[in-house]
View 1 (tube, helix red, strand yellow):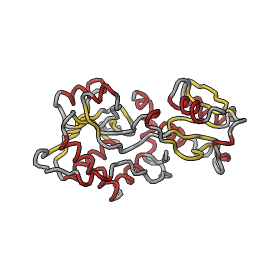
View 2 (cartoon, helix red, strand yellow):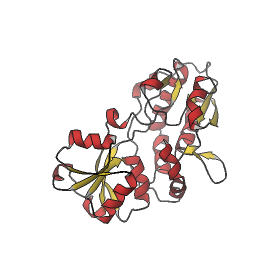
View 3 (cartoon, helix red, strand yellow):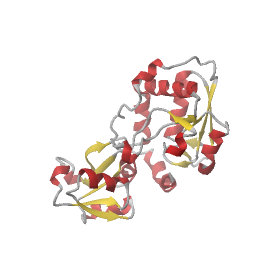
View 4 (cartoon, helix red, strand yellow):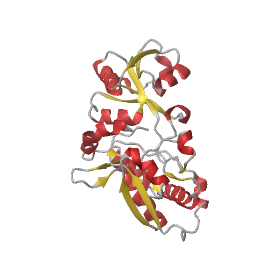
Length: 271
């Protein structure tokens, strides 16, 4: 998640930008509405996070902890009517702090790896991170991946998105880049026809290049390649907290609060 540090200035600039986002897809498990346990064992939820992953969790110019994850944690606590605390830790210490019972839940983008799965359980996905194509604005309408066989398509070398193109669209002429920014700048200059990569990262670049380019075609969700998305980690076996969080995520989707947060923090929607 180190790339988030480089987006701090961009994230701050987004808040004054009109929202062009689309509604957030329904990732939460609707069956979770039946899971709400007695709240007696959890009078409070102590959330842990980090302060260097904008726009999810970071400090604003006044030093206040803000972001999508911060607002979401507060909404979860309000939905299940429990007290809420949010404490920031350095990224390399946050998971250990959760293991050491310094908190009840970690909302900081901890990956659902096999190693982490041995220590933690995870909530439902509240924000999936799809792959998407980016083209110049004039090529967005009527975009068809099946018609790209004679076009140069950029992708980050060695990435999961390159693996996706190799597996599902092997006929495309792939052009490798070292970074997302350089690839999308190549779209802007016209040296390649389209870019395929992480939609979240692309949304930040597009916010600065709305007159040039845009998302083309649909969003591709492949958890086996792109990861499970954003979830909340709890210590293994702490089912009352996890069930309460899952229940709250369903409620927040149903009452529109989850979409509201998405529109606020991601003006250029990546779905």
